[in-house]
Amino acid sequence: GWPGSGGIRGGAAMDLFGDLRRMNKRQLYYQVLNFAMIVSSALMIWKGLIVVTGSESPIVVVLSGSMEPAFHRGDLLFLTNFHDDPIRAGEIVVFKVEGRDIPIVHRVIKVHEKGNGNIKFLTKGDNNEVDDRGLYKEGQNWLEKKDVVGRARGFLPYVGMVTIIMNDYPKFKYALLAVMGAYVLLKRES
Amino acid sequence: LRKNVEDFTGPRERSDLGFVTFDITADILNGKNGLQTSRNKNTLIIFDWNVKQLFLYLSAEYSTKNNALNQVVLWDKIMLRGENPRLSLKDMKSKYFFFDDGNGLKGNRNITLTLSWNVVPNAGILPLVTGSGHVSVPFPDTYETTKSY
Image (tube, rainbow over all chains, first blue to last red; front, side):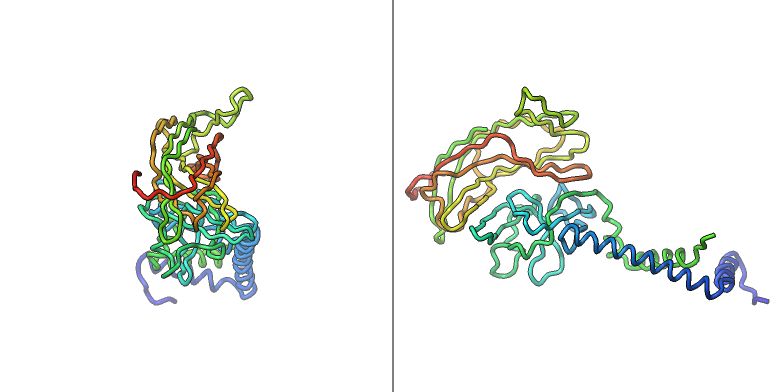
């Protein structure tokens, strides 16, 4: 028999182990395959989005308040980055400064395009007093097409807060992953 | 939309700087849906239940020897839903410096000023709309040395 492990907590743990022991090897492999399928499908959908939108990061979360009151921290933006789409004043672009990882969401306020298609442009956050020259690389005065991650085409408020919370509180992220993993592995299909 | 040019350029580090003063008269109506009647082509119905705000901006578009296309935003304004949709601004100075990338403003006869706006919904697509009506303004052939802006 089991050594006494008193209380309700002990009882629930025993149920969990009981479940695992009862599954035979075949069922376990089946569950793992199921899990792998779900992960692969999610990855395929994400890669498909990247191809269809032309952007390396078709969904981004707004991280700062520099575009308020239009966008707030935690809002979700949907991007496209079609090669033939010209960059025009007034558009909201997501760009990365060379050498930095964090994408910035601001508006284009100046565009100078040459006949051969060469474009340089300047951005500014709606909520900022000055343009973004202070954010660019040392000596860099303009952005180019290669710095653009995508153009903001659509948006959903608040939804991105989940990723911000997971970033700021990693314990929450691990707990969430553990719960999801346990659920998928132990769920039985009748 | 009515705009006037008053002053003009002064060089700074070899780039032209333009000064423009303008009036803006615009009528952006509240409405229930996006239908346009054929009688009033100019009446766009814009503010509906899903519109949080409009980001309005006045941009100057022109061509120079250096660049085939130039666009510079001179002025912008955020119009929240519920604010008066009729704009009647007179003698406005540009909010931002109108620098050219080079010396293309001097003697440039064709600078087109257009009012456009970005519709920001509560959730959904973010369209950019250009208002009907735009004005062409010319810049003079010589630089001005006195600062009367």
